[in-house]
Length: 171
Image: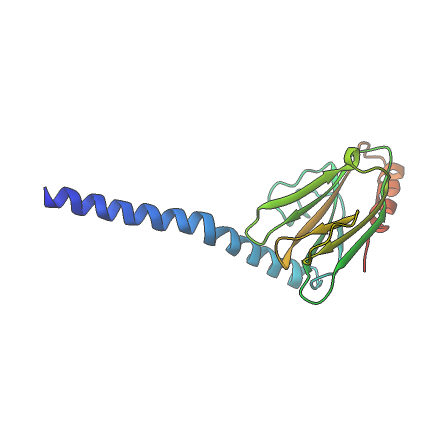
């Protein structure tokens, strides 16, 4: 009988440890590795935006990205100042803005249908604010991704959407 309780106790301890490892530590490790790779391979720092071309099987940084989207990403750090995100987004296709915590949990997403205009004007802050267009981040450091759907793959369409992608600025 003592052996059964001992084995159950060991099983309980292993379960709790596995749960904590899976929920708390592995996502932060994934974020840290991804941040390191982007920073070193793409030569960008925190609060600098990186625009990616349409992914192919040869050029992807993410495992299995959607080849129908243009991606713009930024690792943000709000410890010194707020972040202003401005862009002239396309009006003829889907686009979205998403924010993630370092543990890879998505805490904000808004798409083209939820914005009143295609002129993107957001302020990301760690401070409390009730102003319109201001988003309060639950963390000082995180990740933002903007996706723009490229419906047609002809060069004129790609260039059109890339011009909108390049209009995304961070101040």
